[in-house]
Image 1 (cartoon, rainbow, N blue to C red):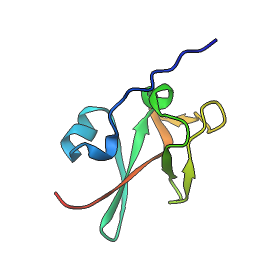
Image 2 (image 1 turned 30 degrees about the horizontal axis):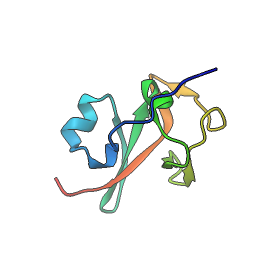
Image 3 (image 1 turned 90 degrees about the horizontal axis):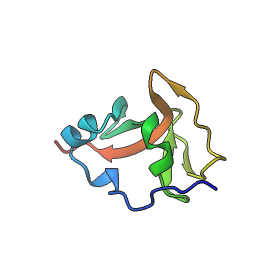
Length: 86
């Protein structure tokens, strides 16, 4: 049985500096939005049904053990979108 941490702060509430300090990486900008990819260490922390955006900018819901945990250079192939305001 796997026990997963569920009580984590929503990274959408983090500043850009906080995201980068937590290991998130900026993937790309589109208009006034930026996609930040999750570090692979966050896979077990993401709650089920959390809204994620993949590297093709397609929005999905995260499902533990169903959503791919494939990584490249320590990053998952999905993340969060934030409005550019900083």
